Length: 174
Image (cartoon, rainbow, N blue to C red):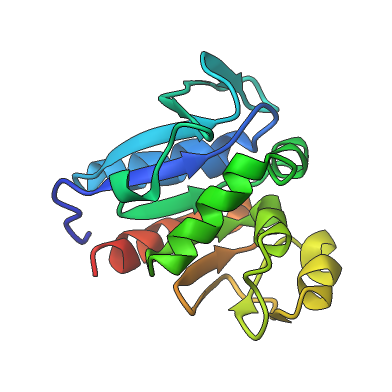
């Protein structure tokens, strides 16, 4: 694996995240020597749809893109639908893109990219039922295990996590 030597990776999520889509990429980047911070709408702890509990390090209102080197957006229908309505989360995602920092996104995580108006002309993948939203927002949607384009690393579902994790570590190391 590539060495992320001291980089700090933000993970934006809230309750109802797809457990493995948060915990597995988090472990992958931490294994490559990155630090992670879970950023959410409220302090305390968030819970995945299958019961994984993760401590929140910072709120979306308090987080600054300057603290981080890259971003991970896990899926989970409830998580992705809720987080895209948080104006601070949307602004933070836009700030990552504006700063040219890489964004890893999996499954339903792409919904916030449509809310932030970041996908026009970008080749992306996602879970199939987010395809229409991404296409309507201008993305070039493809059905592939992992796609890298315009600073985004995208994957479809938990089945793609091995490829997604390897690719985010590789791209975040650049």
